[in-house]
Image (cartoon, rainbow, N blue to C red; front, side, top):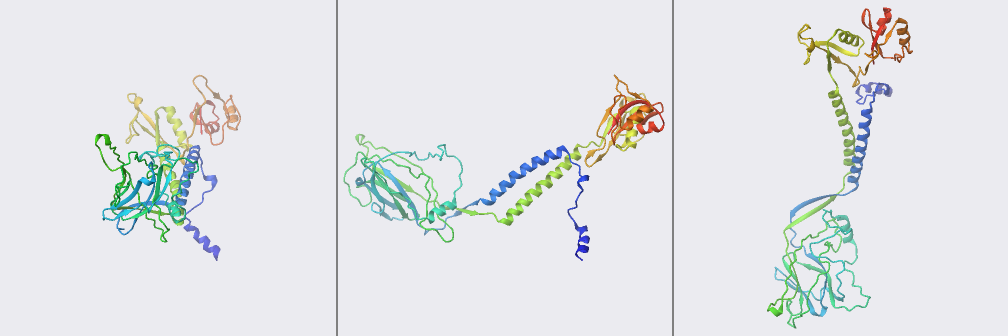
Amino acid sequence: MISRILKKAIIFDAFPKVDSGYQNKSPQGGFITIIVTIFLWILIISEFREYWNMNQKYEFLVDRNIDHKLQINVDITVNTQCSYLTVDLIDAAGEAMHLTNELTIVPTTFKVGTAHSIGYERNKDGDDYDDDTRIDVRQVMKNAAGKWNLFNQNENSNGNKMEACRIFGNLNVNKVTGNLHITAIGYGYGGFFLKVIEAFYPRLINPLDNSIEVAEANNSNGVLLTNQYSVTDYNKIYDATKGQYGIPGIFFKYDLEPISVQITEKSQGFIKFITRLCGLVGGIWVTVGFIMKFLNRIARLASIAVPESKMNLAISLILYHQGFISGVQRGDVQRPDSIFTPTTPQNITRRRLWLDLKYRDNEPVLKYMSCVSKGSKRIYMNVDELQLWASGQRAKFVKPIQPGEISIISTSKGILELRGALELREGGEVLCRVW
């Protein structure tokens, strides 16, 4: 029962098999196959990378989250003693905060180290950083879920004199324009004047150096609110000897734009990956196959023209009867004749024989045609020599005839094919061999 059903299902076979004996392979096809295979492997590896890696989608949205507090991480070293400094903040809503006791302030030594000016960044290799590196959202989420301390305590074990001050910690402020001041005591909000510190020359160590906002805890819905910012710095020097006075300090004015960038990471599904992979491999093979067939058709010569003469006409007719070409027509140098045109001494130079070429499995049937008898050396054979030559042996130092090969002989009875000359028992000049 099943075998009968399978036999009837043969008519629906969309993948008919072709015997390898009927398949014709060519060097050009083999070379193209190697190139396409290498190209396919490159694309397959690229698809696997795309499948394993996360895809990031960026969307610009209007920031509607007004109630969310803005966390600012501070880690600054100032070349002034801590007892001379005060930290204050005021925002556009009128809320003022005295932060000297809110932040951690510890004495330290002032070292520039690897710090650089604002606006100049270098990558890990020390080269200029100018590429567009993607944000590793998964790493940020992992770090946000950890309990590590963002700010390490200052280590000072070399006994140097600690005349600088390190200020670090976290600030939760309103999402409005604000101003963070690090000034001399007496210039902050609610402070009182002590004295002007002549030696107050603030220096920033690693200001906003590759920093990223980290949430205090991991959100259950996988959403992490961070802030991206740009920095512009200004400085002004006051010379008291010239009557110039101002407030010595470091001022951070921050302003917010009501724009948020939503970065979504999404992995490619397995079904989509398999579909893309099958479409890629199958599509390229089918496309290259169509291109090869198209190029083979273009490369084919439909017909060729040879000068019209009695010998060329006789040889062309032999090729036609032996199945090497599909037709012979008279014509001129442009095209075959549409109506009969006789050949005369006046037009003989423009007359041509148009031979319609024949192809099998995209290969020409007439592959090679070689002269045997040449002007410098004529080759004549009698009937016995022709019979010996046709039996697969050498004659007159000429290589023997191979299977599928014919030879054209000029005899006293006209231009004949080798077998025809043997049937008529005629010898003559061996003109050419064809295969």
